[in-house]
Image (cartoon, rainbow over all chains, first blue to last red; front, side, top):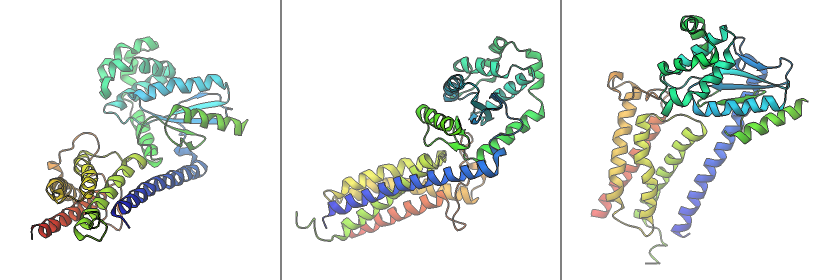
Length: 216
Length: 145
């Protein structure tokens, strides 16, 4: 055999092995997660998890997010679009995976805002002003306060409530669940316990629509 | 020339073997980061910086076979080997944590996989660099005789 062919065959075998191993790894992981969704549903949805949408919805979008993550803010508006397009059929459940430095600070503000019944408004304001307080993946806790009044919050109460140890505990639980589900990047979505085949808007849209078709 | 390129040539085979190891290591590390989504730590990145060029430069040295490949590949192998050695010592706790350079981001000590109790990612890297370096040193000796 020619040397050139030996190298060519070796290269093809290596790359093929890489692709196949990747495929098997992903499909095995999807199976594991499906198993967890059946046997251990609380890993996906905890009692403490904020949710949006009708309780009768049959399609659950579980989103692991980080308020300081740019892609999360983009996807927040996509997900809102799905909810609007299929009223009453989708429920969004928010889980936290604050991977950025200081990011749990913003989760604490969100949770404190929840006590004032302004959770979704605050999330919206945070995402809209994100480029100011978290530019270049460097979240600055102090900068966000300037924007919070736009959500109609009582800032003094926020400052007090956000240090509630229950919130820190909630974040810890969410991070533990994120680890169990192998969430290493944000946002990560599970639609009725199914992970995205690969990350992207189209993939999420297809998964949501296929679940709606299957359940309605 | 065309004839000698077709018959078995131990020197060529040694470089081919090095390239194979570098190729497997490169794809393996990409598998960890891109498929299994393990974020590479700082020390992993330095090892990648030494390993990825090896997969390319060794291939270039194979066609046509170039004796100088040892000269060009050995510094990469040696540099990677040193970082891998440091990483393995850090991982196993021989070097205390206070010396470790990665304070932010991904910890260089986080254990992602552990097969048979000793095969970890830094250990795989150390083995790959050791093998490539040993093979290149053997080749250098053969060529200098």
